[in-house]
Length: 123
Image (tube, rainbow, N blue to C red; front, side, top):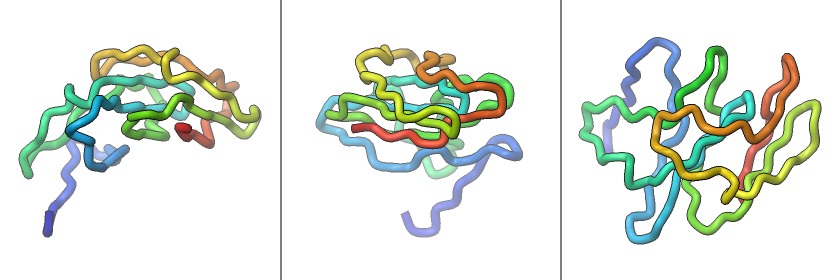
């Protein structure tokens, strides 16, 4: 859309993901936080919004946690995570059960005090 403006509800809110969802195939949305929490939910649960809407909540964050990675998942099988203190860890996406949007998610990567997820990708 030409001339689109992003509006946030609260000061400090940030855009975690913007992209087109595949309409003809089954897909889910995956979100990963800096503290190693992950949530996966059906893209169908995200309603199309008008130009003046303010978006949807994907994950219920714990205090001082932030969304680090978000992606639409179609045929990918694994989530790969790492941090400064730990090498790559592969998490099968089937281990991250589908939930409703705005839930807390599942801890998929243990981070130690002061560390955080520094790399995330789906393969």
